[in-house]
Image (tube, rainbow, N blue to C red; front, side):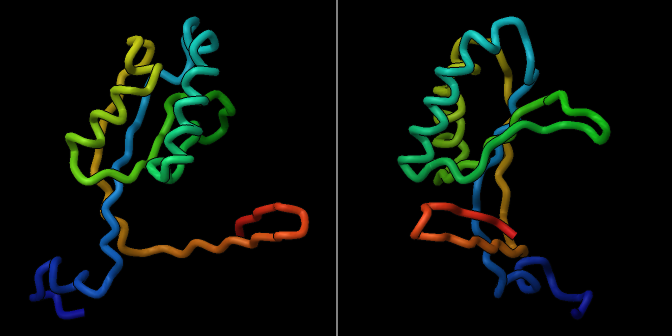
Length: 124
């Protein structure tokens, strides 16, 4: 690549999919378990509506204890993404706070194996 070109020129042919990443913390608190079913129902609703792309806990190397949650959503703006994040029961009830980032996805590879006969999905 020519180092004199700007970023927009260098990435013009790449995907450029804009998603929003919500990092929610702390992952564990005494109130978390009481609200967890409501939070999970909310996540499944977002998934069914086509808003939720990926979500799950974040852990450090050598630990199985989540330190935060990461939720990747589809939205058209920071304002829309913030409104979605604010509706999460953990955030709405003040159990967790969050940070919000726009993520421009340019590179990567997703492989899925979908078996219709047993309704299973696997990722490589």
